[in-house]
Length: 458
Image (cartoon, rainbow, N blue to C red; front, side, top):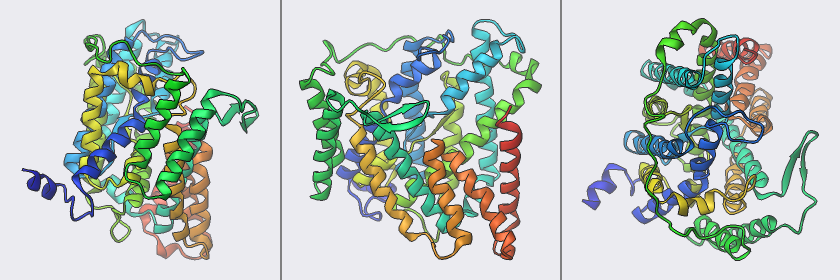
């Protein structure tokens, strides 16, 4: 049985082991488990300054785990990639803004009609994702990304992950004037981050297996010792009823207001297409899965992503997408779909152990220094890819540089990728190298320009 499992997932062929894949999956889950508690708060409108949407937080917690488990396991089985899925950050805030628009006087939906109509829009966008995948349009888009842009995507995602880690650590704080280093060096949050980061870095340098996961556990221990988190009185709890959000899409209202909502469906589509492409290229490059500058079976990965979004809408959620935190499991050594499946199983287990999982994931906001060291170190490991960029060829290196800085500066993979896919064909054209590129490269660049000019301002 074990041998069949190893053979199906090509574990030995990818120079991995079952034990490594299991720990890698747990590591990926730990670094992205924050979504279990953050997603329900966002969709329910319980974040600071937000308006309540009327969605039930308890039900959303359970369905967050369901959507993440479904997408992650499907990715593992269908595409055999070590990439976990969950409701996407960025898309969830856009979903809440769509709910507000549906409830505005311009559309005038009342009560639960607003968020149920928004869910229908997400569902339709998921169907569009799936059609794009079946027509292999996504694969065609991925294949026009040059090697230099691929390496830049991996490096840019690394910088983005590291930025998230530094902000979660409390070392970097945001203000209206930008990002700055904190003045509060006496905080327990920074102490937890410092101990966890240095311990993880040392173990990583010593090639200790499971260094990232051990670092998370060390950080959790320091957080308990300093009173920042506490063991729950009961680590197990019965899951809340999900009937209030499950399969609540309102298609009649969507069709009634379709002309006004089409731009938002298209925005969901474009956001996820390029976010997923960026994540797959970045994490795939880090995992050594790229073959001849292409990602084998990428259409299966896209199908898993699209089906995840459709299922997520059924569960009452915004777009489900591939997570850049999967790079943490890859850095541990995860190379196959077993990593994603283990992460998915962890999400299912979390439904019943939410108090225990919440001890780490629900660190007093807005920080989480327990998992922050893992993100910073994974970012450092991914940045090594930029050494492979063709820096001497400015028609390659300048678009690659724009991607490299665009992803962290915009805090969005898709937006950063747009910088490169727009500038790349223009620079080639102006320097007399237009024949190096296919017509699709120019077409995608034009589509992205139209998207930025018309849809992003909708």
